[in-house]
Length: 388
Ligand code: NI
Image (tube, rainbow, N blue to C red):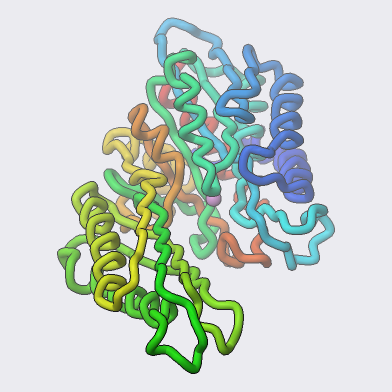
């Protein structure tokens, strides 16, 4: 069963919503305009219940099927937030806000779930309740966790939950998922090295934090190479190195900031332990001190096998089996839909954005040609999970 005709007919309207979101990006929890626009559209479609302010600025909408005998409740989630960077696309609908941009396609995700809401309100061809989840702060603010912590799953009796993210480089109309770990646990690393500042011409009187922190950076690369089992997956990236203010001053402190990624609790524990040991031990070697902080951020996005297979079967109905990979290799990016998957069984799927700039790139733009397949996926998922 291909793209739903009614949905194909809604493509221009949904594209209009998407480009309006794109022109007005908002970041983290500050998605007031977007959330208000989402709630207004959901109201015009005739949703049975619309509740803003879940997880600070999230919006939850309820659509009841024509039949209410099954007692089934299916959650479907989109993220609404943009990123703090400057857009360089030059598009007519490019960001109107300097320093903010929809560079991850959450504008597309939101518009697509709205399209599904419109279709499901019109047709209601299912037996049960669809709960549409529009979350803030996916990009580093744990908005998904905030909505779960706000009691969303229990309040609406959500039994299963699904999420979707576009992927540049995957052909339009293709979908991908897998059972088990699909995206990594994403943790924050911060290391403050303290030495002894002084004159650059008298290094013997100081303790050079640039040298100490440099050794820490190099030693950290031994964790994946020499501490993690080669059959496991891990990433340690130190991405910021801040020290010094003049060419003739040995700085008193140096600061390293980065991220650690893993797919299992065992590897996550190992990364935390080794990062702290290496930072503190290396600093000690040179007579300096280091304070290493390892903050556990997003957990592993772990799909439940039955729901992942179900989502893949829906994607195959829309696009054809040859367009669906139901066993992709996990990726080491993080995703806060993981918190929803810890609360309820469900699955996350990628869908193709075609040959566009990668996400988080200043030239990225969500591909509107992906809209019909995306909306059809949500619509069929609700109708098939809760057959009338
Ligand atoms: Ni994203």
